[in-house]
Length: 185
Length: 276
Image (cartoon, rainbow over all chains, first blue to last red):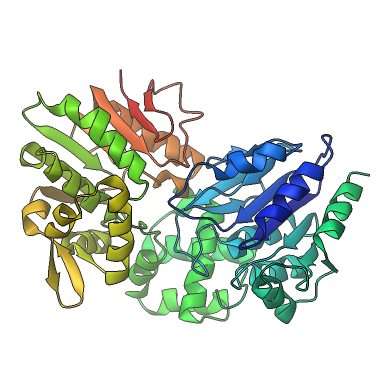
């Protein structure tokens, strides 16, 4: 079973909402979203993602069992780990790259837990969080995709990843959507 | 994070075995996934290239294990984390304590002073501190020594004040709870004097007292194994007074613990519960 893990920061929200809107209702893989967000704003984000999403979106609790076809958004002020036991663990560890949730943490845990059974996607953002985690995923055999810096609203994050690893694909947002749609086939 | 460093399952087990041998501590009580990440982070911070270097340090230097155990603990993040939870406590729980002559409160497995400081400030603000008896317990003497100091770094003070502003506009009250010492802010001894500090392992030992009115156990069980979490929460339930309150982190649940605990939710969003 494939696991889809997406990281993003500034400029990624419209892309993520577009992805969720265009997924088929029968999309059968679990998807994990680690998006930088204000720690003080706990409500509103997941609700905004749900508005146009064709698949269910949740903020998981600690040790939440993962269900195929569901989307899990890292909660505010917690790191989100993906585990081999098909559950989600949360942590209040130190901020990484000024972020909690940190994309490096989520991607790094995906590398360790899922190995090649994973697709990692890094979107627009204003810092380098996610680059090291994406490299770890690549080193573990996952397929990795970086949003085209030319298209990204803020290209720092995709550029940081491209500096240290060679992705399988550099895609525009519409190519990312098309790739995910084809996965179900 | 300088670069990805991943400890293999085999190396992870080697570290556990070394800690058991040298420190007489069995990490079976802890969530292996997060524990492994703590080991990785420690090695990165210390610049160790391999697990062999770490194990060698443990075996060669008898003081090293204390340092290691101290460093891998996950501290708390800031004061007044989740201001809504503290508001809820003030609004819906504290008024229930008005008739009590003594308030017994326990913070098990403290791992930093943020939750304790927040509680002390809140009790003082609500004129409840004077009749409070607060237990702060940890299995680590070093952590307790840190907590007793009550010193706050400038950066953390800034973040905490921001949180407090969401809680109350009376920032003068907050700042008056501290005095300046060198570059740190320190919590007033008047507040800290109400705390009883004890070395205590919440998983393996019996509670330090009984009849608690309130137990705050937020984000500590995230790092426990499922069975240790069950053991700890059931113990905490038993030592609460009927009608006593229990708070866990907003990212946590009591799912799977319903058989031996009958907590009733007081606030579902802020994860505050009551023992019937």
